[in-house]
Amino acid sequence: MTLPVLQFVRRGQTVTLRDVPPERTLLEVLREDLGCTGTKEGCAEGDCGACTVVIAEAMATPAGGETLRYSAINSCIRMAHSVQGLALWTVEDLARDPLIARETPVSLHPAQAAMVSCHGSQCGFCTPGFVMSLFGMYQNRVCQGQAISREQAQHDLSGNLCRCTGYRPILDAAQQMQQLPPAQVDEAAVLAQLHRLETPTLEGADYLAPRGLAELLAARAAHPQAQIVAGGTDVGLWVTKQFREFGQVLDVTRVAELREISDQGECLAIGAAATLSQAFAALQALWPQLDEFAARFAGLPVRNAGTLGGNVANGSPIGDSMPLLIALRARIVLASQRGERQMPLEDFYTGYRKNLLAADEVLVRIEVPKPQPGELLRVYKVSKRTDDDISAVCLAIQLTLQDGVVQAASIGVGGVAATPVRALATEAVLSGAAWNETSVAQAADTLRHEFQPLSDMRASGDYRRALLAHLLERYWLESAGPGPQLATLIPLAQAAAVQKGAV
Image (cartoon, rainbow, N blue to C red; front, side):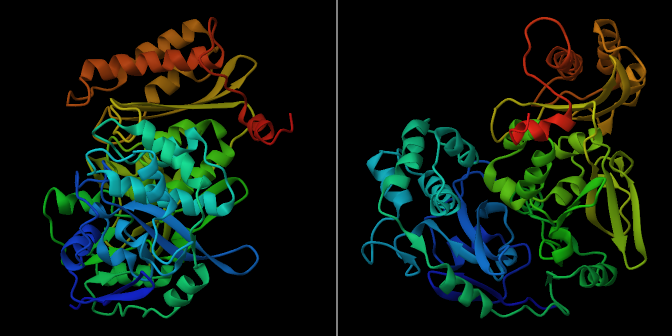
């Protein structure tokens, strides 16, 4: 086996690296190979944001041109070879990149200058990561003519932790940087450089990154032992925490067909390599009430790198996307050179991190039925921290109500079994029942006893069981119950119209 040459654009130059092991992280390459020690390792698990960098890739515009899409990501759990063909910025680059136009040849970027003037740096260890998240925010919002609100700043900085508890001046900096003299990336020059980069030779390579579905299926058939990477937000932990080494890696994130999100009439088809940010944006367009849940799924750098297919295929019992997709009655599509097969998501799992994926298969897309009149969806994530934390319990409930009767029920649950599960017994109690306090109390008691969750660092088994029952009762209060309304749920057929101002 051989290793493909790794090339990316940085500071207006092409960086070329050879003999980079397939499991080497981007942070290791930056700090140890390139001497970029401004990027820090804080947690080595994508949790604190000290290692944040910004990448950009070429993307087509509706008008037929090209632009750059910027993403703040965690370099500590990102495979180095995954940035092949991309542009990259670290904290050292913002004042030195010749392709960032500014008032003087060498001056602080607005993200840096605002942090200085607002006294946003305290002990300083987390500062490079915050600056890079601010840079990503600047490129995606300020350079697009969008104002940055306090709420938006909190959203975009959700993946960065400050151990000095100094968030107020950092949020001040996020809002102030849009008032400073502008700094604009010369996108035409960056795109020209990206087009000049080499296309890696995959034949016999240790790091395979096919760009088409046929090429991917052929690679999987030829290399069933290769470790699939679909964003690396979990595989990266195997490297940094378990010190695993991979003889060969199959990166699916470059496959064009797997990155597509399309309207298929009765369902939304989400390619397995669509990032969590992209996938949730598509889901939120159909289910606006998912906004809060999507923001709490993980920090923004994790959502920018992780993929929906990777989350599903990984099958963690505390993965948050699966309970939602189960409640939405999603189906997954597996493919190999032998053809495609489909199944309900909940049928995919056979045990703890085990599934029905054959050695020559890959997950290619998730198909989610569109909302129908009378459906009410709600998702609850309970964790110790509000932002950037793993769930103790995740409960997703979708009911179809007609004339006060539950016509259909689908309930997905995470954190209570060895796999993400569907609460079939509770669904059976609710289906055909009147939607009232009596049926809710019976269903809550059933849900409390349907699973036997373990006790661990996040919650005890008893707490999880009690929590399930109380969350179902909360759903009742929020949807149709008496007393103070915790939130308002409306039929999903009306939700899109309300969002657009039609009703």
